Image 1: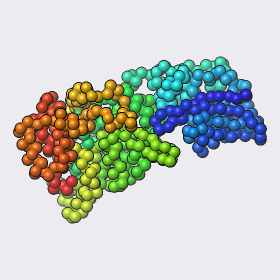
Image 2: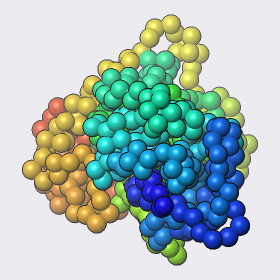
Image 3: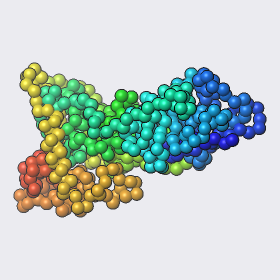
Image 4: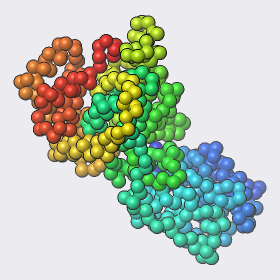
Length: 523
């Protein structure tokens, strides 16, 4: 008698229903698994046999064949252990086929029959609901994550023995109550009020957060660049529930979701080391997984010691910074991951770190300084709107016991500026808050000032006569390119939004021009 249990595979960030068929065939006792399984799935035969035996159940002394359909989708990971074990028990007649007809089964088995954590439970549960399943059996450690999906009965499974007793009716397992995403509090973050001094840098980060602009901080070691970058995510607008689910799905697939955090409510902050590989940053592998730029989706990607990164690694950032997605192509096909991040980078002005410092003398030659700064390509620097110097903090400010302005206060101003921008783009902005699909990414309207295209810049960034005169003088003195011209206008528009001004004034434009890189820094 053929048994059938439903499970799920993860392809990119989406789930695909997998039908686990179990039957007997002539031959010596053993198990064959077909349907394009990887090595981890092939090893299920040993885990399932030991788990069934140690659960006090009888394993059949027959030749068993397991088919994972559709065979065109590659199956990877140990999440098929539990459905295969149930298929074997149904095949033996120990459990009825009707016990799992409307259910999806996910879980890795240990040799003693315990059910272990698997990655990608959130997209699997979402796929189950979309495909009309009413019940999902998941590892107990992953039940909170799955319960974020409404209108779905989540059964937490601690062991194969417990699941057998539940399906047999001896000891039913109570379902996990659904978790309302709104009830999960945000995690603690670095607060602006703990940072001493650097008021002009805090102002620059506020402008960047309000308009979605990229930032480069330049300063000596120990000036607070990393601390300022870590506080950046706390002043960004709070994520909506749809955005939080979108980010959590990425972390679930990448298996980086903390066990005690079923939903990520804070905007991500990712700070990869400068030794990171190309695949580690953008994603990759035989079966592509999200990289750091996708893990920073809806949040901040912080690149400390920017010139130390490999030039090849830095150059791959250019396309995701423009398109907000990254496409990874393999022989089997292509997968697209979201990458709508805000870049915050930091660097020393020279190899020793003290070029231009007021206290400590620089030991680098001018040639060394120029060579160090030229490690960052012009096209990448062109995509960074705000260049800000971070000097060392004076003793008087470090020893000052007064508390500065909190991140909460700054975030309120940022959210007000973002609301102005959303209202401005409202007639042409899609109703959905979810990430745009790869097919229509270039046809979507901007969501913040940094995303404005030339048509929107011309419409919303008009200057008066005094502003035009100032911009004309700046173009000549600073030798600005057309791209720099548009970026300054977008930055000035953000500064005007923070001030609640309908028009861009020369004051707003002058502040935007101050964030251009200094020519004597070589950038």
